Length: 324
Image 1 (tube, rainbow, N blue to C red):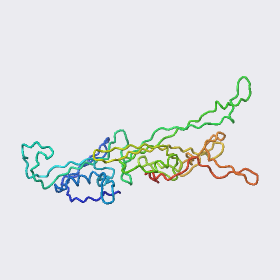
Image 2 (cartoon, helix red, strand yellow):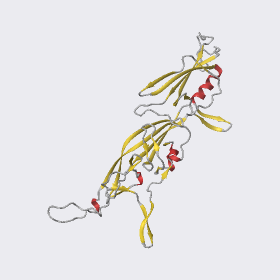
Image 3 (cartoon, rainbow, N blue to C red):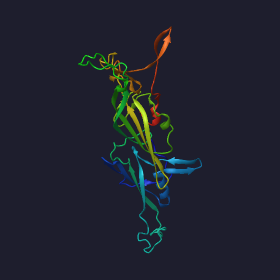
């Protein structure tokens, strides 16, 4: 489980802290009340909230603090008030808002009320913990693929007028609709710059099994096609910048049957039909999906050569997806 970055301000927690809440729409929230020296309160609040920091190594990014045991819950805001101030009456007549109404009081301690949340869950699945400590939501959406079928081997059915066999014109070649699904994975509050893998892996398929953290489904190799991504960045008034990154992956099993007729039982593989995925092509003659290969000539005769992959395989863990 990811750990928080060190805090260099000493603090203690009040006896009635923390307070947790579980909500069907808003997810997990929590509040902690901590004490520190008044002179150190601003520094502690800044370290809890995270954001850009400048040191001898240059500019870097500090992650917002995570709630212990719930890494997806991060600090959203911090409220600072005096703890048992010595002057509870104030000066009573101040008008200098820059200095504050109680500007002459000498506070020893500050109470920080720290609010944690997993983020806005409206209209989405609840976020699940991620090995990188990110919030992740997943949805399943309908998707469809069109396969153009060649007409050179198709003929019309028998005609009542006895015209005999008539070929289907190429202009009337049918299109096969392959109903499928799209797996949409959304990463919330991603710091830093966009990873180059988001661009480089477009149009590839998974080279190893990938597991959905929400649905518990295991996607076999070559069944996920990385189709597109969307990235939105939000900048706060304090200069904090975080990305919301959405991946869209098309899912195709394209299971192969056990014989060339297309009528045999589905070929079993690891408890289910063997998936050819996106690298299986529909064979109109067999009425089934098959692999395709290069044709080779050996001793004057044609043979089946190496397999042709329409979509190159790639390591999808580079996209922060989980192998399994």
